[in-house]
Length: 279
Picture 1 (cartoon, rainbow, N blue to C red):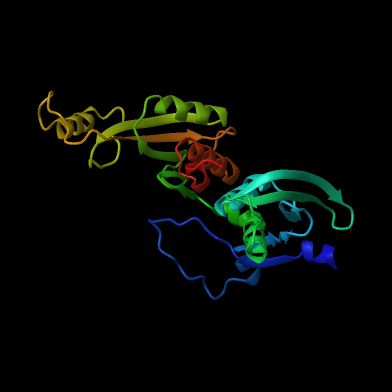
Picture 2: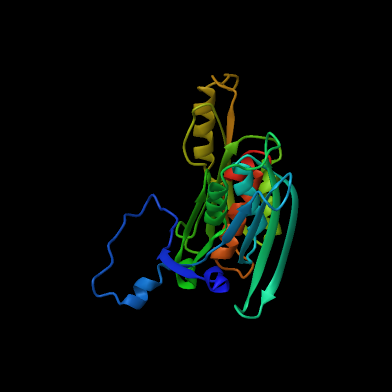
């Protein structure tokens, strides 16, 4: 019975990345249920149990879930968010013959920041289970997705007929272009064209095309107020980078490639929630 509960599946509507430029359209009544089911996701439920009786100094948390990439990161993020310290940990994975899947089994020895045991064990179990339960949309739903966004970083597969367009906006710093170019190269992306712009203070507007000298001249005048020696009102500079890229196969970026790139840029530029504070 315990194995069955660990392998329990449930379906719920898939979370789709929002697009600011597209309005929600209700599905036609003639659509079949099989088409509608493509928008659902399957969840592998995590099972967590916490006890203060198994160790004299620490709260022992045991976690069992179908193994997946990033599980340790997710669990660590959840525990860190609750202000808990991991004093010891034993992590293992193994194939379960009955369920036919690789099961991850984690055992964490925890204390609060004051060094005491965790008081609210039910809350601990609930938070860890909620975060470590893994839900994945259907393959067709993933392949149909064309826009991904995290903070000021986005990837759009509809903005260009042949390329994926990567937008990155961040406080300017030395080496930004090198970091972004190195990341794209490491992930197998081929850069077809790019624009880079630096704005100061409250300046806004899309980056000029590299070959559009008139646009670039206008932006320079706007920043300088018509004088080459005019000083901006604010010293904070923002760098905007736009890359048109293709993937390793020569086409637009796939779901896996886009989310991998978004995640890597998120780590570099602190757009991921857990990247904004030390673990």
